[in-house]
Length: 260
Ligand SMILES: Nc1ncnc2c1ncn2[C@@H]1O[C@H](COP(=O)(O)OP(=O)(O)OP(=O)(O)O)[C@@H](O)[C@H]1O
Image (cartoon, rainbow, N blue to C red):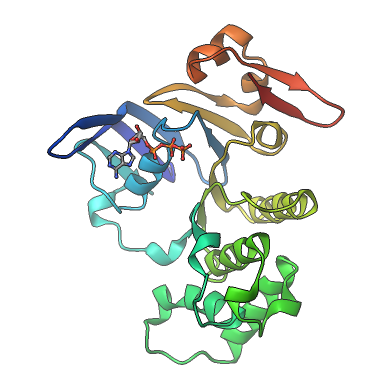
């Protein structure tokens, strides 16, 4: 039997320091199957980034457990299988002296090690992924000279160059203009066709309902996990309960937005 890619069981996490304790996640249970495209949504401070950090092993569960491909995260070491783009990627580069080529190739160091030289195959992977994200013309540019949206696409390319089977994205389209957001979702669609499992954290509910297969709504607890169709059918009362303020999904010509 095939295991889910992610299985999260009774997971809780509370930030603690000398001054205060902040519960971030309570008793989360969630399964994500291979090839699923799941959008993780919820208001500010609802625990989305905390869940991503736990999944990536950056912080350790205090209660409950996470399995990747049926293996406890404690024993998981195939990190080259997991691509990650952080929310903060496009603020990282200011003053960083590296070209787009160097930044994107650094996405291969998980599999090649830090000191290995890049060969012909690697350069082909580089050219392919730059083309996929429509940034071939930026290849030799210094990263510090790029716009926020261009930088974000460079970091998406960096996550994709190792051909991961799991892609975790924390608000990757912040600062990207509408045309490039569309291109970005087209890229995700291509990856989905290749059975890449995608976990996308976003506030952009309008886009999510059109592209993701499933939506998970977090606000400390997992309030909802279902298909995007089921999510679209959530009533105003249910959405407002999740978000903690009055809210409804509004239809436009081609998209729906979350409005207070
Ligand atoms: N390093 C930290 N130390 C203490 N509390 C933290 C820390 N990081 C997050 N928190 C708290 O944990 C809760 C969940 O935060 P988290 O960043 O996971 O939310 P989020 O859903 O990603 O928010 P946003 O949509 O604003 O990015 C919040 O109450 C936040 O203040």
